[in-house]
Amino acid sequence: MTATITLPDGPATPRAVQALRFLADRNGTMHRLRDRYGTAFTVQTMNLGRVVMLADPAEVKQLFLAGADDIDIVDINLGSVLGRGSFFAIRGEDHRQQRRLLTPPFHGRRLRAYESLIEDEAVREMRAWPLGREFAVMPSMMRITLNVILRAVFGADGAELDELRRMLPAMVRVGSVLAVLPLPRSRYGPWRYFWRYRARYDVVVDRLIDRARRDPDLESREDILAMLVQARYDDGTPMTRDQIADQLLTLLSAGHETTATTLAWAVERLRRHPGVLDAMTPELLDATVIEVQRVRPVIEMTTRQVRAETVQIGRWTLPRGTIAAACIALLHDDPALFDDPHTFRPDRFVGARPESYGWIPFGGGVRRCIGASFATLEMNVVLRTLIRDFVLEPTSAPGERPFNRGIAIAPAKGGRTTVRRK
Ligand code: HEM
View 1: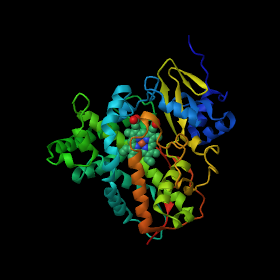
View 2: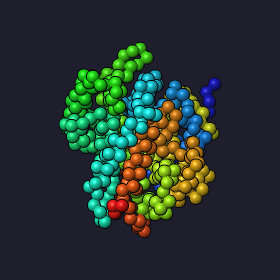
View 3: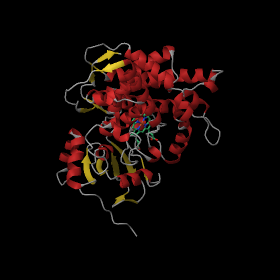
View 4: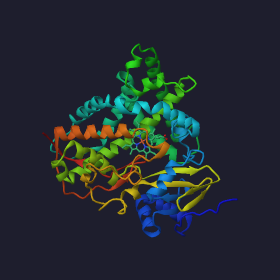
């Protein structure tokens, strides 16, 4: 017997109008539709077509925890940008195996090895900060998180570090445009630039892999490239060069701008809440990182697609092909989940963990961000270093508006800040 399809309600305005509104102001539209339809609604979007938006923690939990045969990632064209071996292009059993190989380097003792590297990069970057004069902190945070990934993930130094540092930000920028714009693949225009970058990238990564394979100290190395070169699937085979290159590019694309924009928001929020800075303790700093991600999530939603004939998610029966989104931004300011949700109040998380499916800046289930612990450590160390060495001048300027940079939502003015040395 075929189940009866039930989708949440949504606006009756023409599809194109809905899609344009969603494109022009995603956050505002999501909030308006929640006010009108509640914690689930259906809306037309430009690049994904019809999307079922979910903002109830129990339904989001079901979406995240469904088996990969029932629900998996959306078929978008990321494979052509990040490569066929990228997390964003693989599914089912391939994905499970890759998670098994890549999860250990991102956890526990291995992670702590990066602490001094992160502090080192933060100190180096902050040494160049102007004193007593306002500047945008975002480019600085982008440099710190780029250098950290190139050293901790790619294991790069010397000429390779310099070359990747020069080339990758531009390559990721072109790639992120190509991932959302359905431009025909052509030898001209943006694809041409992208392939040129990719060819240079492959040469540098090949050099790093060759060097790792020859390295007599490979086993004691802490970088992720070194660990991937040694990793083996269940049947004993190693990852191919292409798989390693695709996954490193994926880690960089997913981890560089997201972490930097969250750090820029942390500075933007802290300058407007000097009481938090005055009361700072290690516990309050951990709580601050959680609260910044709650009030200013840099990824507003994450999507899945139904693979089975139908899937039941809470009140809804979704047919095959349906794209459903977990609305991170809506959960995070739901007054049913957080008291006084629009107020930045890190102490709400001192000694109290956030709601597990109400606070989801890193998504959830088998697709949950693999770099969540790494990013959390990095944000803590960078902020701890900043607060140790500098006084952040408070400001009464209005909060910066969110601006969509393509991959992540950043403070529109780049997190303007003024510092003095302690
Ligand atoms: C504050 C920083 C970060 C935020 C907010 C963030 C957020 C996210 C989100 C929302 C997802 C989708 C999860 C889902 O659909 O359930 C994701 C996936 C992913 N992230 Fe992060 N991320 C951050 C940092 C990082 C870092 C530092 C890395 C690696 C170095 C990383 C690597 C990845 C990868 C590989 C995936 C895909 C996982 C998979 O499909 O199995 N992210 N991230």
